[in-house]
Length: 239
Image (cartoon, rainbow, N blue to C red; front, top):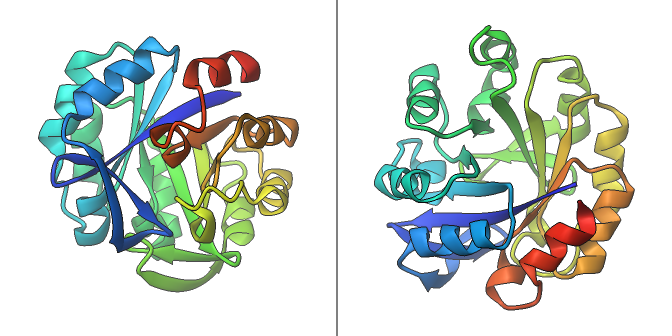
């Protein structure tokens, strides 16, 4: 299983939110490149980056910070936040991001998203972002509820040529209460797309539980920033 340490960007700074609430922000630094270098040095193969400004506005905002990270580290990057049209998605990929996460735009038009993900040069480079409260998906930086369930969408996307699904339990994100293992396992059971767990990781045991249910990856955010997880050890244990 892959460990994907997270860099959430807001106004160029490295931050974390609680349950996706923009009013509940903790700032951990103003140098995303330094953070990325630490992650690379610990043996991470991927970094999970989120442009929080873009997630809410729909307009890529922290592009210079993402570009600086790309220039600094020789590991794979996935980027989410504001990926709401093909031009923006292609721009991110052309700028050196290895894959992009599409959430809100996919939920608004799954037929468009399926066609996008199936385009020859994009196949295998698009990740579906499923962010849910009590199983119901939310969009626009988690501010807009939808009538779709994560399981329904994951099942529908099962045979699409996606790079993966990132499943986030919003209620647990940034709360250090543990991954929603039951919901994540259910999602894995209905799709052939590799699933990455997000939201609530606080210990090595949580990561091992993700590995046990068959997660392709797990995102580590606040737990690392708060000193609760040794990233190098986590990468070794879950390899």
